[in-house]
Amino acid sequence: MKDTNSLYLSIDEEDIETGLCILDLLGFNDENKTEPLCINFNRIKSRLTVYQNPSADKQTYCLPLYHSVRCPARRYTQELGNNLTIPKLIKVSACVAIESTDNKILLARKTEILDLFPKYWGFPGGKTNHRENPKDCAIREAISQTGIPFKISPDGVWYSNQLVEIEPILLYENLYPNDLNIGLMRAQHVTMFFRAKIPVASHEIALNLQQNEIDFAVWLAKDEYDDIKMDYNGTLEGLLRSRRSMQINYSQLAGVAPNSIGEGISEGHKIALDIIFSAQ
Ligand SMILES: [Zn+2]
Image 1 (cartoon, rainbow, N blue to C red):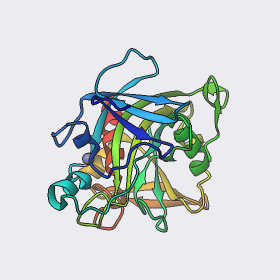
Image 2 (image 1 turned 90 degrees about the vertical axis):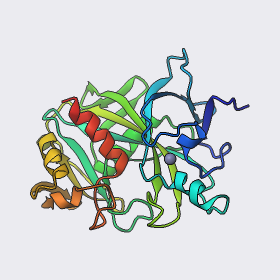
Image 3 (image 1 turned 135 degrees about the horizontal axis):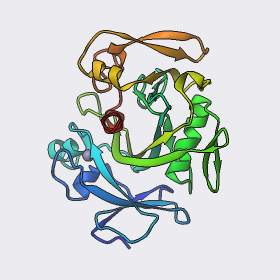
Image 4 (image 1 turned 30 degrees about the horizontal axis):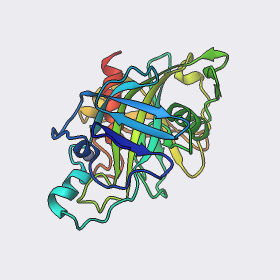
């Protein structure tokens, strides 16, 4: 039974059938809702639940939920009424901002051939598997997409015999395309963002990028991110799948994806970067 104060997001595709804006469903009419929500992942029922009311359950995280200021799901209902072509299910996905001891964050570019988010820059991540905890999902995707040798065990995530500090940062209603002017919405995810601090410097980490999904990666520092936001010109030392280095222009990371050259950082990932870098 659903109660009116909860929104149930099904991981095992049995529960919710909607293409409506999740913030609308929760009754939030502000464009930028940042008030913390409580979320809980039930491994047995394989279900992520977003609550408006706090819970005493210690498995419950309290996180802010964001969506795009251009949220196409909200515009669907406002402009198109009931004549919608919408995704049938909201998927739960997860991603992780990996932070090195020299305070850089790993960003990867999705390959051009992907159906969803092609050439978008962001943290490694992907959809959860059946009964998979979002944190485990984020780390599993990070291992497969970047080759960083994390080890997932029942007592936590390890890197080179050290326990990795992982914290959830935010939830984001992730839509593709993320603008109704680009096309009708084909995918709707709730993405849980994590931050993982690894105990080594960025230059000490040998990346091994996954064929098909990721074609470039770059370690981004706060001052570089600030310069990119100011539209300054510059380059970063990026890495190709072949492990050769390559110059990445600031313009490739500028603005919200898709920018004028079809790249840019995914909007939710920019919100997470702002939170992480503002705390450094
Ligand atoms: Zn929305």
